[in-house]
Length: 203
Image (tube, helix red, strand yellow):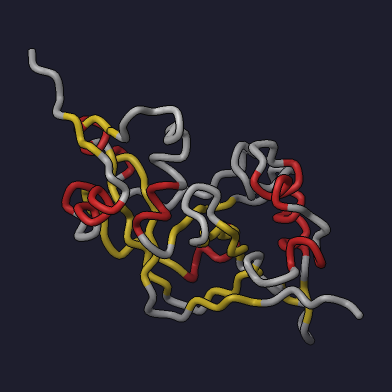
């Protein structure tokens, strides 16, 4: 019995989150193809944009993904760093179809991967997953099946993150660029994750 790769749909009208630096305010969304991120194309032929369905996941997978929570005596971030970030609210204009890697049996049954391979900082296996999903097609017109993948967040488990292929760029748009300090969910994130915001040093 073959295992079907399930689809996770994000309806038009939904908002997604992308954390960026303030220097990119007003610029087009960037689909990286340098092969340095978890679900990038290993052949560097298509670009990938990483998104969160909520602010905590978007932050933990970008701004905080290298913070050593276990080694640090306290969780803190400099106010200067916070002020250098902006949240891009990304509106979905047309339904997104994502390969759901969070569904039961998919990683082991469909891709033959274990948890260590999935969460490793060696991205060989996950980039291979990206390439396989990108190639899948079907239907009468043999159109691509998926716009990207929904995958388990390494840094905010059990939440999920999105790796969106650049062929879906016309399905989304930036609806607002919001300073991180002004984002409605920032105070709750700081409280829930017990993060101290350190003031900038004096002159």
